[in-house]
Image (cartoon, rainbow, N blue to C red; front, side, top):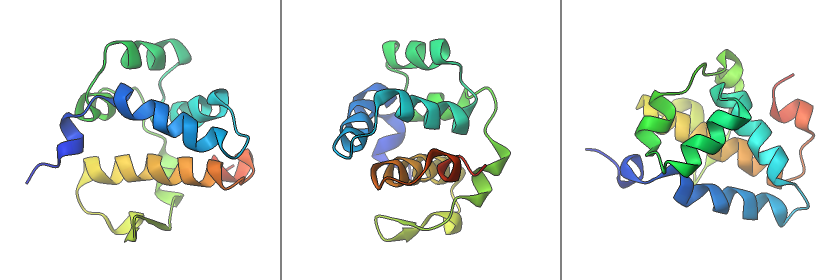
Length: 115
């Protein structure tokens, strides 16, 4: 079964990430930093993905270098343990959701980026 989110454009969800973070006094630059850390995109590449309205499938499929430290991301998103998600693409999406949640909760950037 393919999930509806796989065909959605990353650009359609990105503003929600920014809004969620901004409600807790975090910035768009911090959201971008988290996304770049996870995916290996440069800022210019990230902006191009957003402008091109790339689907989540292509966004993660085309990521230059998924961060190997992402396996350290644990916890729950929408009641689901992220590290227990078996479907690779859904796990990557949920990793990003979890990082944005941590940002919105005011967690220090060094901890979010698993430094």
